[in-house]
Length: 270
Image (cartoon, rainbow, N blue to C red; front, side, top):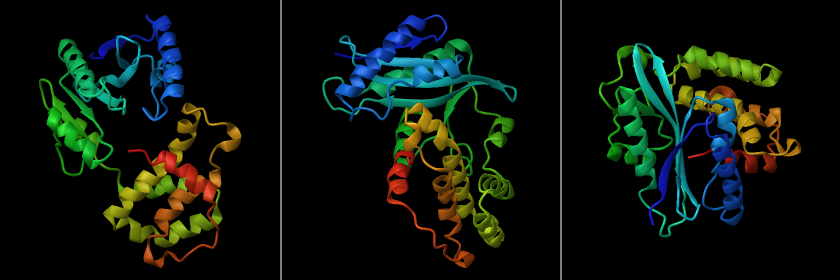
C-alpha cells in the first residue's frame, strides 16, 4: 500500500492545503512520535508562495512524508534548493521508500523545468550518507552543501556564494547579537583574536549565531506560547557557550537555568 506523491500549488490549491492542514493536525495528535512537524506548507504557503511542496499520502489519508524546495535563477544558472524532506518514523506497512519517491518527483520536475542541478544542506553525517546513495556529491571540502547533477554542475559563482563566512564577519554578527550584554561584549573582545585563528571555533560560533537568531521563528512556527519562549538572555548564552571554550576566556558566574537547557534541546535538530 504505497503512499502517493502529489505536488501542491499554494495559490491554485488553497482548499487542498486547508484539508492537508486538518489532516496533519489530526494525525499529529494521534501519533506524535511520527514527525517533529508535518505541516510546514501551512506556514510556508503564506510566507513563501513560490516554494515547491510535495506531499506523500496513503490511500487512507495518512501523511507519509513531505518535501519543500525552491526554484532559483541566480549566478547564471537555473537550479533548485531542497529546503527540507521528512518522512514518517513509524515502521509499519507505509514505511520505506517514501523519501526516495518524494525526491524522484522533485528530480522529474527539475528535468522538465530545465534545472541544471539540485542542492541541499545535510544536517548530519548520517543524512549525508543517504544523499550520497541518491547521487549527491560535494564540490569543495569547505562547502557542506551537496549537489545532484541534472544537466550541469554548479559554476564557480554559485560555489563561491556558498563558501563559509569570513571569520571576521562571524565575530561581527556575534557582536551584533550580544550588543545589549556588556559582560558578553567584553568576553568577545578578549577572545576574538583567538577565535578568528581557530576554524573549528569559527564554525561553532557561526552555528551558534544562526541558532540563536532563528529560535524566535522556530518557536512561532511551532506555536510555542509567548510565556514559554526562550528569553533573550538564554539565547545569548548559546553564543556564550562557544566563547567560553577559549582557554583565556575565564568563567562567568551566571547560573544557567534548567528550563533553558530543556528548551534548547528542541533547537538542536538533526
